[in-house]
Image (cartoon, rainbow, N blue to C red):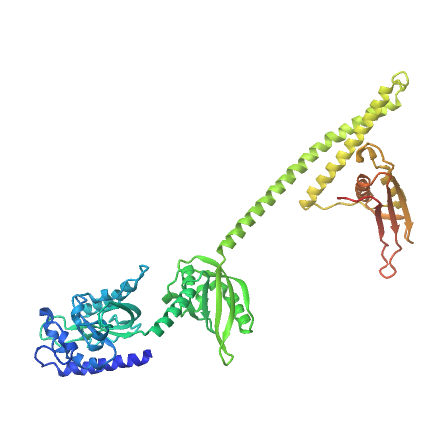
Length: 533
């Protein structure tokens, strides 16, 4: 449809050029070759245009609405009959600047501004070149410097579509250029030409629907683009260009690799995955903005294939990942700082516990010494029949046991802090009797410190050595194993029900016949209590 009208447009311009060449000697007179020609005004400053405007006798048969404008004022010079049948008689708007015939949008949009701007570009170019060219071809995107172009969907105020001449709004597509006119005076001898096509209601509705869809994609809150098989950007929405700071001329038609130069291998891998029919999701890619900043983006994409199965274009959806990257970096900084603070706290705690251990050992030794003297003193020094002395000796013994328990707990905490710092456990291997180790572990249980009532609550603790065919002895670090058994038994006694039974069960297995290595030893603490919470 557009090609057909463009052909008509070019044909008219061709005939116009011939008409102008043959009319160079025609005297200036009033033009009355058609009803539209009766409306041509007599303008003293543009009298030289009269003979040249005879070309309108030919466009009267053209379905396009044609109007000639004075480039200096923007006011109409002449129109054809198709124009008058829609816009009304020439006298109604002859004093208008024709750009004002475009309506302003109800929401304060740019309909009139856009139309007037397109006319002004051609007027400025015409005045600059002084009409050097015979005809300014109205071609969209023309780069010959004439400033010609097309403008679509312009809402115009028409006065000739009804008998009463009431204003009616209609949409037009306009092609804008200029035409050189004959003049015997050393003055401007050209006019701005507008060729309009009325947009029918069906097409207007379709265009409105298309415009809504285009706006949906162009201004979507997520960036989108299409790439062809070699990575050239076929289309990108305005959101993406806003993110990167490029204009359409700077971005579309360029290889995508130009905008993510540090991710060449990743982009090639993405195309490899897409080419194999896969869909990619949440792939992080670093893009470079126009002002050379790095933005982190997440890409979701798949491929739209042509009917013959060949690669058509990608469908890429892009989300800005910079905020998440910044948040992750901040979280990492906080984690690092937290770990550093914990290490400092562990170091402080380890040093503090180390300093506390010395006084605790000294205090326990003092309690043991005094208690021993109370128990071994001569009768004339201590009266063992004195109940108060017996109570003092028992109190000192309990204090010593409590201090010993506190020292063990501090040693455990200190060792745990050292392990967190990367310290290694140093073991000393010796051979010892398993049964005797179990008995020693049971004898070290302090019921008074583990039970609320200070007694044993009828709890029975026993050791069972099950000879599974293995040896009675074990070669390992005796102190470390005893320390583990102490904790297991203390936990069992602390959580056991009154009158419960606790068994320390040790099972020794024979050496392996295949590997010729020592057999394992299984140490278990079994109880009938509720267990640890």
